[in-house]
Image (cartoon, rainbow, N blue to C red; front, side, top):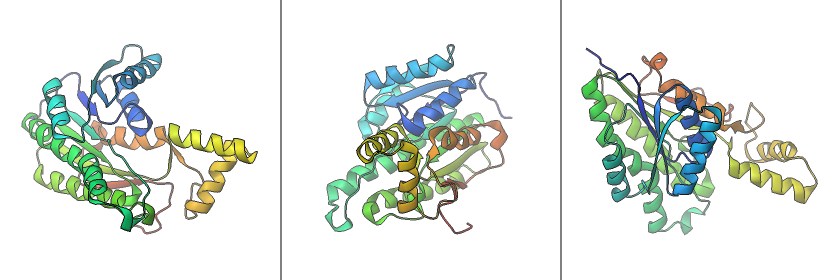
Length: 264
């Protein structure tokens, strides 16, 4: 028989800004107890303040640490041993020509983008299965299926997340734990918004015009014609973490504005 706690416990990695913060905000609005994560305690405090400005009674805590290391994961597990929802959102990227990517670059991206989720899932997912309910969501990227030549190592790690998520779903078959992946396209994070604002000032354009031109030049197959908002991306993760998504497992969902042209 499935048993679930009255208040579900969620961990969202890399959640002091961008998509991760939007996911944490959405889960907190639903009354879940949310652990935020970042490497800087001040940024965690700022993120909590942001969430509580919308949801004053939000149940929040924070863990400051680098989950791209074994030590960081072990410290988080000691801080919060149990979770019902794990959102593996933490990720880094860099633009670099393929033949200039050295072993250290490959290793760091793999540690952060792939092994952080593998290590956390290895701890939390079996415990979810023992309780008969759980949700694991990986935040990958359309770069997993449409690898950008300017950051091949990033695309490779995001493709690895897809394989990891599917393998984890197969491993947890019929346990009540679902594992799914979302693949965001270009998203209007704080950093992107600042970049567009700076470009607008230099070019005497409005930020929305700069954004439109950026999409036209760099992602001409976009059906949306703009970047997605962090909340638009987060809504898919929040849905996959809910009871309503109980029949969805081992799947990947593009939130890319229609950039990828193939059907499956």
